[in-house]
Length: 195
Image (cartoon, rainbow, N blue to C red; front, side, top):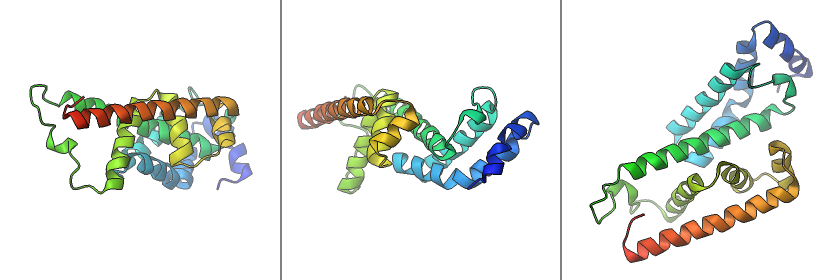
């Protein structure tokens, strides 16, 4: 963990063009956590590695302009949030790409959408990931933090700048929307149609 003196040197690094050194130290300290967060959401090592790179590259590129280092009190929480958002963005992009590739004139879904060889748990997690990609960004992020990262309501509220009550409302809305998405998917599967 970075010592307090290192955190105090944050302004010195950014003013003297040493953001690369500080970002490198942050990557050393929090890289595994960023990777683990992305991997839990994506369940894919290569995609999680891409998220890891994207998070620290974005941090480096926006240091001092969009990201005001002196305003960040908890780098672990900040980087976990960046990892969650980046992973969810990747899920959304993959989902859009996948649905664009589906031939509309065929009755049977493509083989890559069928998970006959996957275990029941893997299949459910894949469905959850696809459904999360359909949620609004903030709802998906709060849901992910609560149920995949196991954050408390208080930690989510603090990290996202929300009230605890609003976190509860967002989680309720996300669960309701996910339930509707799953019911819709189940109904389509029963009728033999694809979205």
